[in-house]
Image (tube, rainbow, N blue to C red; front, side, top):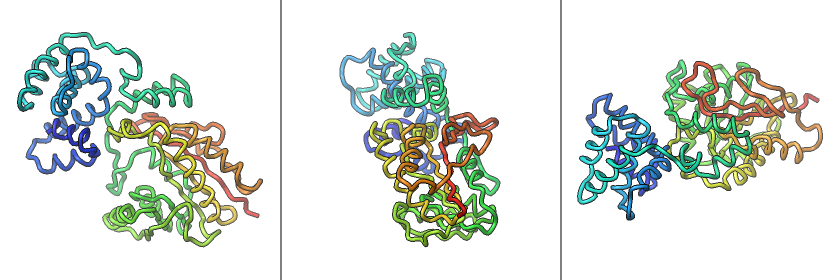
Amino acid sequence: MAIDALLRIEKGGAYANLVLPELLARSELADDDRRFVTEMVYGTTRMQRACDHLVDRFLLDDVDPQVRAALRLGAYQLAFLSTPSHAAVDATVGAVKGRGRSVVNAVLRRVAGAPVEFPDRATELSYPDWIVDRLSLDLGPDRAEAALLAMNRGASPTIRSDGYVQDEASQHVVQTVGAEPGDLVIDLCAAPGGKATGLVEEGVRVVAADLRPKRVGLVRQNADRLRLRLPAVVADGANPPFRLGAADRVLIDAPCSGLGSLRSRADARWRIDADAPERLAALQVELVKAGVELLKPGATLIYSVCTLTAAEGIGVLSTVLGDLPEGAVDVLDSPGPPWDYRDGVATLYPGSIEDAAANDAMMLFRLRRPAW
């Protein structure tokens, strides 16, 4: 099953968090085996580059996708799960069909007997070079290293009191909104609805919007499941169809590169391109400027992204302040612990929340429209 999932992710372009639950739902595996399959698929996908290096040292020719998936899976068990070598090799070889079985057997036995060595830190951490370079530049080498290591650890689900599964960092964003019962919050990028439903649970009036009908459908499904009243509409957040100056709060959980949530999105590091931060920052700026127009005097806009790039944090804030008329908005101070606050932007680093099950990263800033 793990090899099948890896093939679908690599060859078919399937998303790990969608294809694996589908395969598990059709299986009759015991709970322990389900957890083991999940660890192998997500772990092997995260550590793909490191696993390829470990096996490529002993490959003489290219191999077909099934053999490649099996070699990665075996190398992950040997190098990162501390599975006994005979068990990892024998079980992986036994799952391979055809003549490729002998290649998998020979190579994994060589991997099992060789030292685990890597040519550079990006290969060892199993990220594309550009992600390591980008975060090292934006965060500094030490913070980047800590973040990259944290995002190689598996994600444990965090469940709200209402049963909704939501990362701890996202729950902290909801806490910074500061809306009172009865206030109107417009959530411009609401899907799948975690933050919007969290606000409704607190007695806040929320109108949820998202660009695509399918994503708005997810918001409605989640609200219905929680038995919450949450109007949800299809709308372009950069050109919102709402009355100007109507909102007590505007929440923009903007589309972003996702470089702070790679722990929970095992295959994302291999899908994101190096131009994504700048490309998405341009959209983020437009969303924030449109959101400011919806604020009542004295009302607040909250911008958040689950990434760690300067372009999508301080870069967006600086551009927005430069584009808006002087005095149009004020930048609010730090929301307080556990946020790290610098130059107007508050950050949660991966795994930084005490007692959390290894949270994703989040960056946030808040703008207030003057009361006059």
